[in-house]
Image (tube, rainbow, N blue to C red; front, side):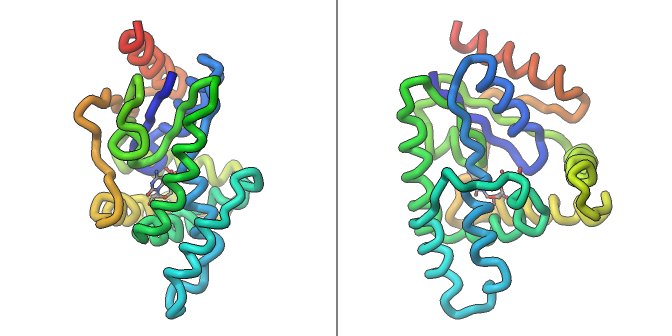
Amino acid sequence: MLIAVDGPAASGKGTIAKRLAAHFGLAHLDTGLLYRAVGLKTMGKETHAEFESMAIDAAMGLDTSTLDEEVLSTAEVGIAASRVAQIPEVRKALNRLQRKFMEQPSGAILDGRDIGSRICPQADVKLFITANPETRARRRTEQLLTRGLDVTYVEILKQIEKRDKDDRENPAGAFYQAADAHLLDTSKLSIEAAFQAALGIVERATG
Ligand code: CDP
């Protein structure tokens, strides 16, 4: 079984994907971590003339076994990720890694922005997870505060709104709800309720 989960920052897609993976015994890939890892490698070099080629080299040489979620989860790395995500060759290199991941015999679930539309249009089920920006900012702020990072709701809301805009307008991306994706708005749902709703969609869709 192949499941595609897309949605904007902090919509709950990562948590839902993780739990669906555990429930169905699927391999899980958070594709945002790939963009974040490339973003991290180019941080501070945005004005460098070689910025694009550095990002492309980083994407082509990325070792997915060394992704450190803790280091990659900061808001600043998220912004760097959306910057490198606009470079077509970076997407191409990362797309190759994602397609390879999908070939696992156990089946796979991938979450990101363009999984249902570009990376895995053949997915058995596609979910598009969303929530209003205020709810997403509140969740992300709590998440980062729990990790001991010094952030405020106001700055996180601003960053989320900027990233939403950059991702929507990304000329190299494909951030939209695939026509055959199931929309799930988690604004008023707890994590448990959101997971149960997603599970219900997958079970109905796969019989
Ligand atoms: O975790 P969060 O939802 O904040 O974002 P993420 O999934 O870690 O992705 C970070 C950034 O990488 C996004 O804002 C996108 O710009 C980019 N990205 C992308 O372009 N395509 C993907 N499949 C995944 C992430």
